[in-house]
Amino acid sequence: MVPRDKLNEIIQRFEYIEARMTEGGGDIAQLGREYAELRPVVEEIRTYQKTLSDIEAAREMLADPDMRDLARDEIDTLEDLLPAMEAALQKALLPRDAADARPAILEIRPGTGGEEAALFAADLMRMYQRYAEARRWSFEVIEEQLSELGGVRELVARIGGQGVFARLKYESGVHRVQRVPETESGGRIHTSAATVAVLPEAQDVDIRIDPNDLRIDTMRASGSGGQHVNTTDSAVRITHVPTGLVVTSSQKSQHRNREIALDVLKSRLFDMERSRVDSERSASRAAQVGSGDRSERIRTYNFPQGRMTDHRINLTLYKLDQVMQGDLDEVIDALTADAQATLLAELS
Image 1: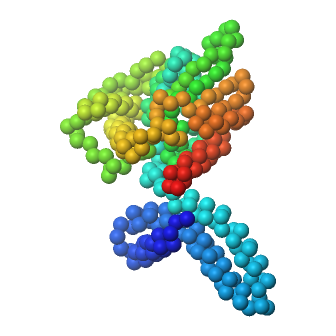
Image 2: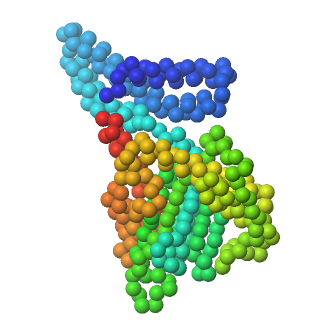
């Protein structure tokens, strides 16, 4: 269990922040974020400490013959509560990803499977759209290239709201589908795939970009089936020369496209830096849940059997229709719990 002096340090920090906010001193926004993060932790600590205090008070009552039986019952009841309280406290004290509260950039691209892979990529896009709607998040399409049959050749979207990245960060990887394609006349089941990347939205303090490192081009949006084929030369393509990263935005406003493309570029650079730091911290990062490895096959959607399987945690759900309608909470909750268990094991 966490040493009591460490718990007291957390409470003292929380009370200091609370006093600073009351006085109006310091960076109120930063203090507010830290206050919000510490508050549930402090509530768990105070509940745990009160229980320990109540046990000590009951033990002192054992010396009184008239109160001995009552005290023993009280001690037994409270000590039975301690394991669950300690588990909840350990979970609350787990290291937090500083990006968890942020919006996210979602990128979807077809993998192997030709047109069927593009159609599956479109299904994934709609799945995440519906999940965002259910959680009352915003879903803004930044770049979308469609195939002739309505599949997605490339999708970049911004999902806004509180805690978006925390919920979606385990979605990065290769999603595989097994079904009879619309283009298949013989009724044979095909396997194809799409790649999903979820990046935390970068803030100005995270990434500083030298304007001299950028090459910015304007162009006419084009592409078979694309939604912006008939627009003016408003599309913007930004190339980050040092890394070779290329970002495109094809909305109607050229000025807005520059802003959007820069935001996406910052998020990609931020994700690259986070991946580099994580790799240095742990040589086994690629084996962990939520590693973000774009080449890792994480999930299979089997339509003939109505089955979805997440291979990282061996979770199988026979509710594929609901999943494709955006009912993702069960699998995301399971992935989150598994990641927390891994962290607890490492701390132990």
